[in-house]
Image 1: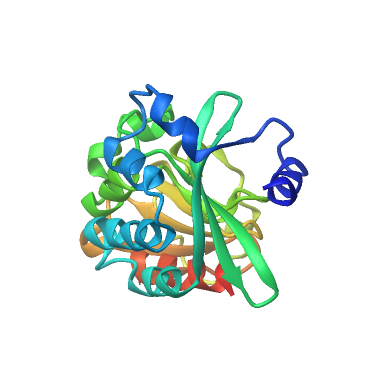
Image 2: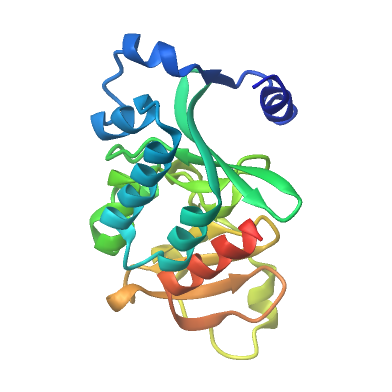
Length: 230
């Protein structure tokens, strides 16, 4: 635990691991009971299986490859707290050791003014993930290479996109109705224009390259999360 916490504190000095024995004394309305039940499970094999089953029950059709990777390589899930905010820490086996990923506590409170007023226009599969599984799931050190927390979703109309001047074709999205839910941390986004999102239609957007329109949101997210694992 010390080695893990030392690593985490390199990136966030106030983050703490909540020991499993302290979970029985937690009275926190913001954490769903099904997550508390998983975290309390003392049999590690059962606990990890329950996590995978939870992913399957909520986003099994959308994140098949991610779930498959977790089913084989997930080594632990723990509750953490950072400046009063709880989250789930995933320890995932990768080629050169263990990497840590964070899953925010699922929420229906959209702490993002532009997104909040348009939340009902976002595809139900995305809302289901955030409201019932995680408020974002991303690489712990960078808080990127994953679905970002709702408060960190990029509202395209608030940013200056220099690439627009270099587009080879007319802009295919409306900036005022587009939100980037996935951030690669290296200038890549998977974005939803809620005026053109039927069947989870999305845009693969880059700050320094041509965008790709009419991609499936979950196909791209699933692929990029696994790339982040590997």
